Length: 263
Ligand SMILES: [Zn+2]
Image 1 (tube, rainbow, N blue to C red):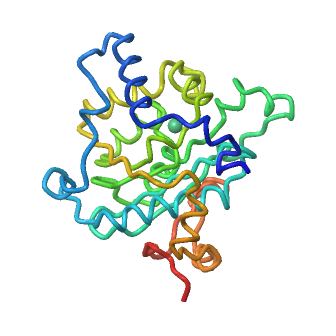
Image 2: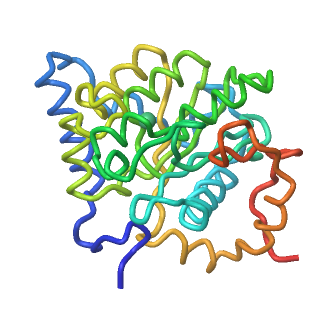
């Protein structure tokens, strides 16, 4: 039985290993006074340090929902990357996005199958969802962004530029293979640099904190077990207006109140 990434359970990276390996890469790059540990924030510090009033439990359910939606709507056969932008005061979901291609980019089949080319034309939802908000004239200052994967360092630049204050993820939701690629910088859109380590440095410099929320190994199963109703979610997703990003970004007419439970 495969998990949400279509990979074996034993391939996933442990939380301590994730932090240790990112820190080792930071040191290798000469950023040895930076550590991922230093930018992690606890649920209790959200309000006192960042002024975030959204309750932790609501953020946890929103992350669970983000995973479930990424698997449901993601078009990549294996790598389901989804991102939600969350109102810091209410915890409601403003935008949901999945990995896609840059709007109107056309690649031949051979180009699409060439990872170096394809990744250059990939629209990471972290960045694309913020761009879509800018296009709609929506404020991004102080926003929470959560995703199924740790941010690459190009998206990290977008987060720093747009005033996002908190990134939410589950540090264990990456497997050995992709962890290696991200540490060596082979997975960034422009294939430049050691993505995860540079993300930590950029976040630290900008004062962006990371809330690590542990979810079960299979977040989709967990979402269903906790009563999140994916069919009801589908119906509510039906009111979204496209953000101009070629089906990648779902902007809701009204912020989506998480969790979406069976009625
Ligand atoms: Zn990215």
